[in-house]
Image (cartoon, rainbow, N blue to C red; front, side, top):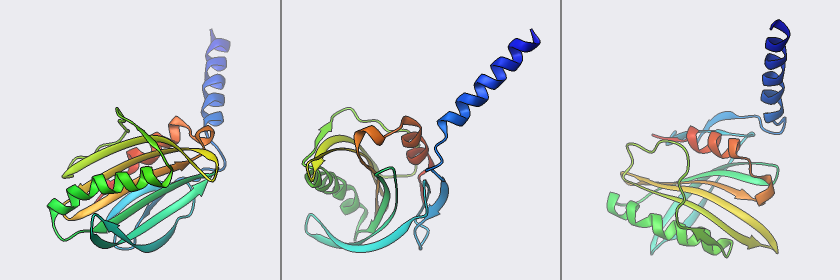
Length: 174
């Protein structure tokens, strides 16, 4: 009985260790103005860029890290009104799909809670960029006048369910 318990313990420990990748060094991150917190798998970088959301020009701050060819990113921008923020989600979805010439799966449902938000749109898509097949997994949110893009983008073979779970479940808009 004792050796069976030890074997079970060693097997459990071995499986736990094999699920961890040394490439993924999860750490809590946020944008400089603390509009969100999230776990990213490496040290993030941030950039600001001007985007057009159905005729409304806004500055979007992107905070991102890349591991194993997958980009883990969160973008956030503020619109003039809460109604425009909700309407902007469809525009964001269209732009993301266009970037990879992608086709969305209609029943996407990602892990994580999204309470205290005005609207949510989950997106799973397959597409191509530079001749390479890609997978896009994204959650688009509106909260008051702010929109959020929470995105994983990269080669299908590099995606792991546990990384999708960790990334999307850790996102908390402020």
